[in-house]
Image 1 (spheres, rainbow, N blue to C red):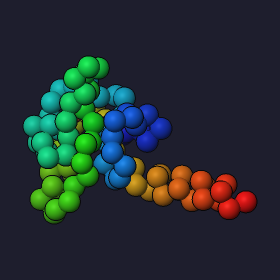
Image 2: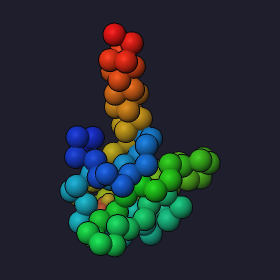
Image 3: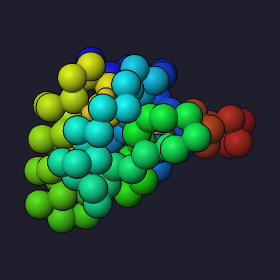
Image 4: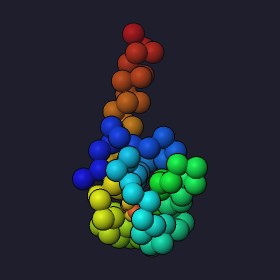
Length: 93
Ligand code: SF4
């Protein structure tokens, strides 16, 4: 299972992300090219656009299920919301 703490820095904010377990196998990019792309310099995948349609959502889910090393996570948004609240609390107090 992907770990939000190991999320790669290139991922856009939002639900789906790739973590540092990625072995650059190409499955996610092939499955959902509208959402996953390759970081060529270091050789791994990341989410460059969160799904915007039910079709893209389904393909992202398919990529998550198909990743051979479980490097794709879908709990990114929840974590970011928590961080936003913490940041807001720091600014407020
Ligand atoms: S399917 Fe998994 S291991 Fe393969 S490129 Fe995508 S994130 Fe990396």
